[in-house]
Image 1: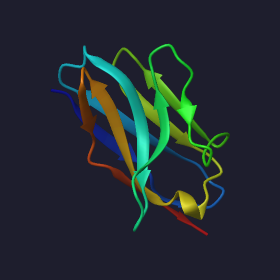
Image 2: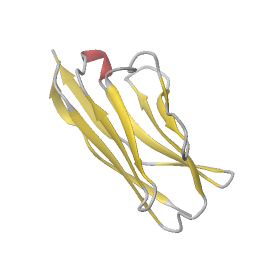
Image 3: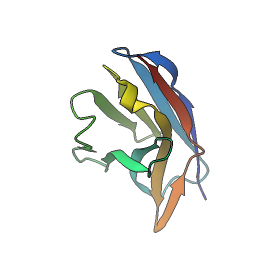
Image 4: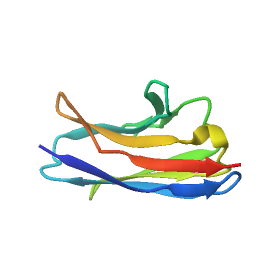
Length: 115
């Protein structure tokens, strides 16, 4: 089974940028879809972006045009480039992956945007 480990984020000023990284360890031969989700305090976990191999990513309306996902299929590693961040982007960000029929999640990384 694969494991996902997120890193990056932390405290960012509104209007600034940051990058999240999700590294995959283990037997990643069966990895398919990957994505980023986030959960703000008191709210449900929500989709940020999903990406399939050789396909155009699908972004949430709230981040489209500001966030960019990149996927290194050889390692594999998933990145989330967050630009022009807003206070409402404050959340724990989770990396997810489909390993065959199994949904795998990372432990999450906190992003806090100060106004």
